[in-house]
Image (tube, rainbow, N blue to C red; front, side, top):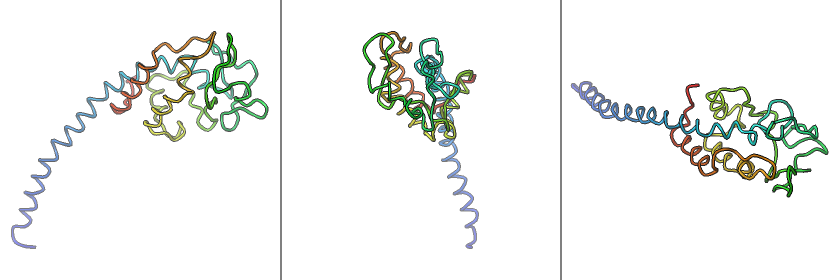
Length: 195
């Protein structure tokens, strides 16, 4: 080691730390600044997530619910191993890729199904924070990243909630507003509300 090289290395390290330190601080500050915006965006999508159009499939138990009152499915349908029903009671037996005409006829969208039993994504009884954390928990959400959750929220099955068919109440937030807020939540860091 050359004389004075240790001192030069220390000075260089101090300069680098001085240059990186504020950048790291500012990056952390920017992330923290996004948290309130992300939490507010999430709060605006909660009414959709708690609406029967979502809750009827994200239901506790081994069955879907139906109707605005979320009663158990009248046909005694079961979730099945992949979320598509069992034996002769597969979801697609009655639920086509579109709504059938007429009041309270079977609704439909492409790939009509429940979450699988391994990741049922049940959020009845959860606080908004717990619901948010559940959506982000890869062990419970089918190993989806936040970006994949955003993609899921834009699938025809989810978007069906705005066109649920005759006799069903659509979700209370516009599709455009919901989609924008889901994307904003993700873009701002997917922070969860305090409660």
